[in-house]
Length: 128
Image (cartoon, rainbow, N blue to C red; front, side, top):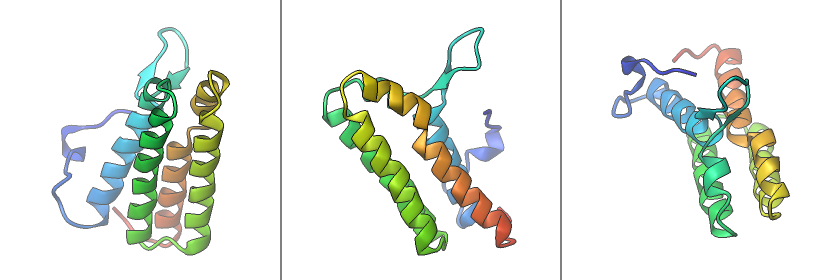
């Protein structure tokens, strides 16, 4: 995913700026880096998650921020619950040494949650 200069409008008010900020954050956490010659992508989650216990806690807080912003955007409770489940599964699965890091790389809860937000915005006819 690439971001044009116009996408870096964090100070702008409204849903557009929030969705742009969430897109950037989810991408940074789950897919910012790639292995050359492959389609394999990973983000800071894979790097910070290597720290025992604390890494997964920090990433869990960042993931909760995405859910907080989704609530501010007006997503219904059942979608917020699905997003919380994604994060919970990732935090619990990611806390398992070594295998948990591989689990984090595959699950990509933040990108999944971003898709829930974007689908909701599209379905409700809101533009950003």
